[in-house]
Image (cartoon, rainbow over all chains, first blue to last red; front, side, top):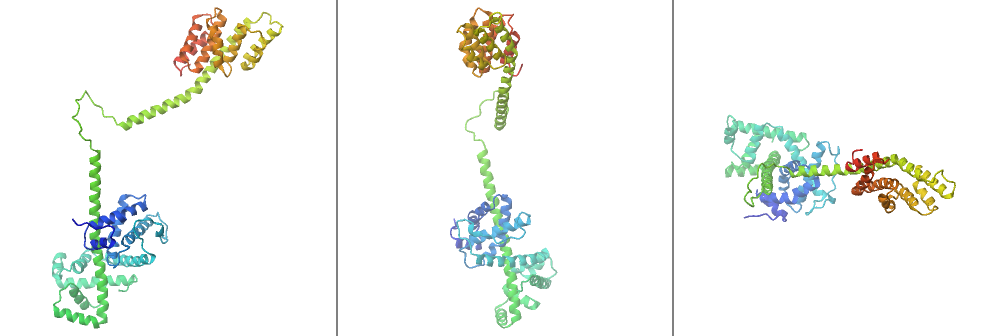
Length: 192
Length: 276
C-alpha cells in the first residue's frame, strides 16, 4: 500500500497534485495539529473550518510553484494569517493587522522567509480578487466556465447539460462571461 | 478577450478541438498577433484560476471526508472504551437494584463532611461560652459555702485575713491571684481545697484534678459537693464525658446540693451539645 513520506515535503506536494489523500494525513499531522496548538483556545470546528478554507484557497496556489522546501511552512503561515483575519472579522482582533512575526513560532519544519510570504500574499490577493469576480456571476455562468475550461466539455454537451438552446449560445455566453470577468479584474487593479 | 473570434479559437485550441492544420495556423498567428497574445494570456490566467478553484474545492472535500473519518474513529474508540466489558456472568438479582450515580454519592458525602466541620468549628467556642456562663452562675454557691467554713467572726489574725483575701479574689474572678496568698496559710485540707478551687477556675484547670479528686469521697458534704461540681466543669471542658457524668451523679445524690440546677444543666449539655 502506498504511503506518503511526511518528512519529504516535495513528495507530499507531489502526492497532493496527484490527488493522493495520504498526503492530506501528513498535512493534518505536521501542520494542522501545530496550528490548533498555536490558536488555542479555539473550537475544533472553527479550526477545521479555517484550515479547510486554507486548503481550498492556498494549497492549489502553492502547488503551482516549483520549490516545496517550505511547503508546510507556507501552509502553516497562511493558516495563521487566515485565523487572524477570522478573529478580526469577529471583532476579536486588532482593526489593522500588523505583520505577524513568525520567527518566534517553533515547529518541526522550516518556516518561509519574508519574501516568500510576500510573494504568497500577492498570489493570494489575486486569487481573492478572481474569486470575488467569479462570485458575481450566476450559478449557471460559473458552471459554464468550469465545464468548458476545467472539464473541457464540448459546447454541445454543455448546452444539453445546462439547458442552453444550442452550442452557439454557449459560445456567445462564454465570451460574455469571460469579458465580464476580465473587466471586473481590471476594475480591481489586475490588468491581465 | 475583447475579440469573440479570438476567444472561440483560444478555447478550441485549449480544449484540443482543433485539427492539426488549424492548430498550427493558430500557433503561427499567436506568435505574431499581439492582440491574440494578450487575449491568450488573459484566458490562461482565468483558466489557471478556475483550475485552482476546482482543485481547491476537491481538496477541501477530501479534507472534510478525512476529518469526518477521523472523528468517526475517535467516537467509535470512545464508545468502545466506555462500554462495560462482560467479564463474568451477571449475579442473580437480590431484589430491586437502585442505580446511584457514584459522583452524587461523593458529592453528598463531601457536603456532609463540610457540614460536620462547620458544626465542629461553630460548636467549640459556643460550648466554651456556655460552660463559662454555667461556671459563673454557680460560683456564688461555692463562695457561699467557703464563707460558711471560714472562722467565725472573720478573725483578725493573718490566716483569717488571708482566707478572706482568697475569697474576695475568687469572687472578683481573679482566682489565679489567690494562689500566692494560699502559700501564706498553714497547710491543711481547707487550704488544699481552696487551692483546688482556685486552680479549677484559673487558666490551668487540669492542675486542680489531683487536688480536688480526693475531696469527692469526703464525708463532709461541703467538700464533696463543691469538689464534684468544679471537677465536673473541668472534665466537661476537657471533653471527658464519663468522668463529668460521675461528678454530676455525686451532686445529684444530694437533694440539698446548691449545685443541683447547674448539675442538671451540665448533664443536659454533655448529652446534647446543642441544648442548654
